[in-house]
Length: 329
Image (cartoon, rainbow, N blue to C red; front, side, top):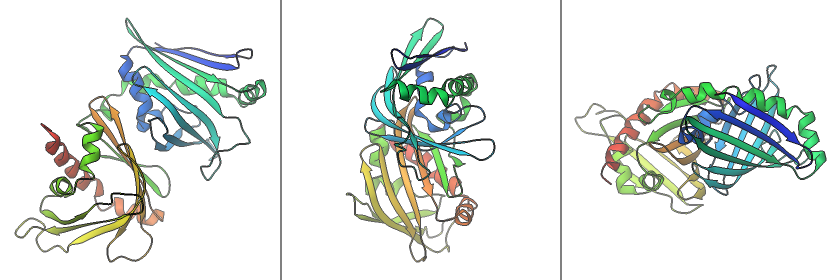
């Protein structure tokens, strides 16, 4: 079922979008919670979006950049006001500067999204509220109505693609920019369970081991913002990695919003130079918890070196081990 309407109302100071789709309401709602899915339709066909942050909780923030056919860039953000899954959510939607800060020269809007079940599918409705007629006219003149029609024309393909986003799919690494990579996986477990698994030292020692043949003798967890952590791994004697040198990482906890988001720095012990910044986000979805880890590298060269080490293979082994730990918990 296609998009049914996009209409502006100068008297009500709104733009309303309505679409009906042949999927359950939970599937439609999930497309907005998962940045991998959202960026495949949040933006006109010629201006695809890339989300570098997507905290789908009240008080959270999402940040994205749309890239035009000639390399032009247009940034935006959502500030999450409320969420009632899978029925509705509300955000402040605005424009962003190149550095990601709010662009206050252009209007911010309040967007209310509602999702209703139908006998043969579900209905999506978004109402964008503007503070003034001038603000409404500004975005209409910028082509917002046409952009919404183009963006939502991509929704059917996203909803039909279950395999790419389903629980049970291995770790997926997506290059977001020259220095950013997003690692994603659905973990079978609740948000609280997955959060605890990243903060309970004894539990971490059982699953955060990468390929077979390693132990984690040192696991010092940062509990409060400003604290440092230290993780070290060593090969198991007689195991497949026997003879490999031990290694470890240390860093600082920069932000924490339990149990949904935290930001840390990461430096390899014994290696000089700048490290990475890691942004972990946990989102409840059908089948478990969507884990998204956005890693910011100091350079494109280091990004490519790390990706070339088979990093995601080791992460997949660890996350599969984590799921086994959560069974029956």
